[in-house]
Image (cartoon, rainbow, N blue to C red):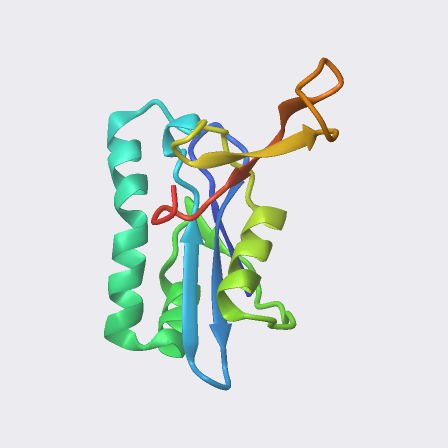
Length: 147
């Protein structure tokens, strides 16, 4: 597992994504935040950050996952940084990638765009009463294909 950070001028580094490689299967996963406009109001920076995921995926496909991660160590700038590798236990690959992302990368809640509600429902048998209610307990970020 590698944590990707972005350090824009005048700002502290912000976690922006997770890179995950299973060395046994060579399965590679990448998950980046989608709220880039929360980090910058500069249109040029925003354009670059919004195209970052496609660029990284393309380079990983071109070089292969292990060579791609080695390439990142040699080519990233002070603006885009990658952490030292950390070992993690894999459950399911996708669920591990999502768990690491949720743990390390903060994101701005965009209701029904990037996040879906987790509802708390209190119910009792019988007809609806004041004791029964449904409310949003928290917002859960979902991968782009699921929102």
